[in-house]
Amino acid sequence: MSSSDQDQDQQPQDIAEPAAGRRLTPRQARRLRIVLSSVGMAGVAVVLALRIASRSSVLVVGVYGLALILCGVVIELSRNGRTRLGSWLLGVGLVAAVGADRLLIP
Image (cartoon, rainbow, N blue to C red; front, side, top):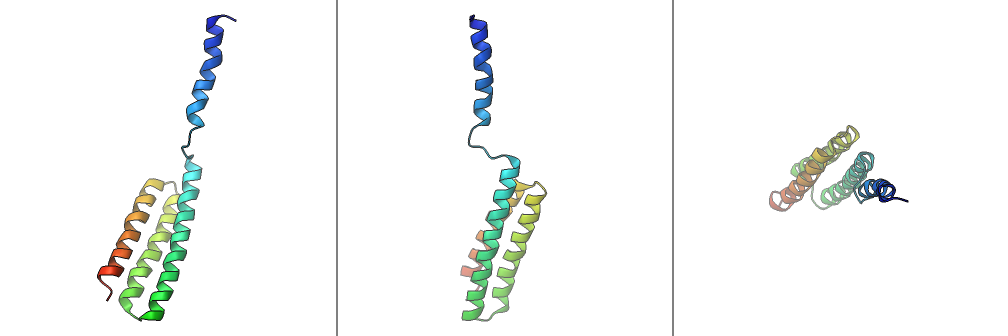
């Protein structure tokens, strides 16, 4: 084998190597965001039920209701391929909901 044959044999391996990295495919990223949003939605529903059981307030229902709507919006964004926007909205929205629970709700 000549050196040019060896170079040709090594090139496909080099090209395939970065593709085999730990990056997610767009489909995997969408599924991951949908699963995270669904888990977030279930968690918010449980917290909402606990908050309503301990104190009945329209503000509690409003804050956690908006968080549930946000999770649904993120699921739809992820289904339509807007995973980065969905990730940012999910993170910021859930942090805002927890912050509003701590600061606004007595």
